[in-house]
Image 1 (cartoon, rainbow, N blue to C red):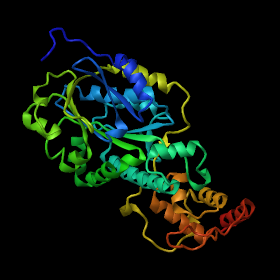
Image 2 (image 1 turned 180 degrees about the vertical axis):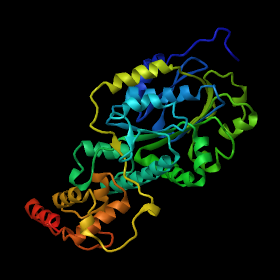
Image 3 (image 1 turned 90 degrees about the horizontal axis):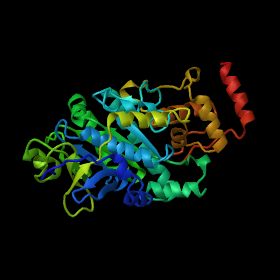
Image 4 (image 1 turned 45 degrees about the horizontal axis):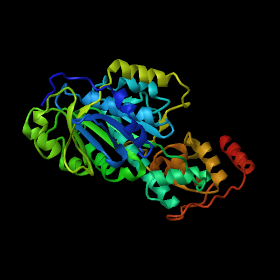
Length: 397
């Protein structure tokens, strides 16, 4: 039942509440959602959800909910700890966050815009995230840990060697504002990378947040429901829509304006809450404040993904057409004395296929030995001086 005197719940009140301030230190990705019906601050750890689906009819609070989630994370996490991949098919909802490009955003190499609006680029980015996920699993396996927080803790204690490809890994939160629109334009091609990420990415710190105003069964499929254990429903038009999102009715009886129902792992029942409000002018001020601070030289780069259909046909290696990363890759290999394709992927931020082609060129140039099955190749050059002479002779070909 609606209050006789409705009041706004400012996000600042929840963020500054003693309960949230105390709890956020124990959370990997703390999100202050709003207040419950008993006026208690309501917050959750996105890392434990581990993926979130937000659905509701137009004008019921989805965009505000996304801004609340993003701002909570900006408020609590340093740029070194967190990166966002933002997808905005409408081209206007997430545009404010463009200013955070060199602080909090992750992009593919060569991307023209840091907020993705083109469907083809969304597919490539999701497949790039799958490469990132596999690469992170490889690092976790080598570090003998099972999740990202353990890996980063081990790295910060200097128990991992950066020369072997190890580095501090930030959480990556993928925000897709209108998921249904992507499914319509991209079809089945987008479902495979989403399914892979939803099933496996949680342990390596990649989390998905999807929003849609079309909560139908062909959008919120069985795969989505199985892997998105945390779901938020704002007001919807029918009990069928409510059942599609939450597996029970109730969202159709909400009063709108940020009134929401939440189901999440560990909850005995649905939780009703009022979403905290952050106005668009406040989001603009927050992003300008962060954007005006000293940032990194470039956004966080995801691995390069190349569609196999676009790759050159396989053939003999032509050292006249060396890859632009060839010289840098050679120096990395000689410095580490490890002929590893995965090392090149990590250090150069490129895909497996491209790293493999560079490794073939390094073999043709006599810098590494032939493929050795699953083991790293032998490095045939033991000093930078020798490498410099070899590189000069290649320039004279």
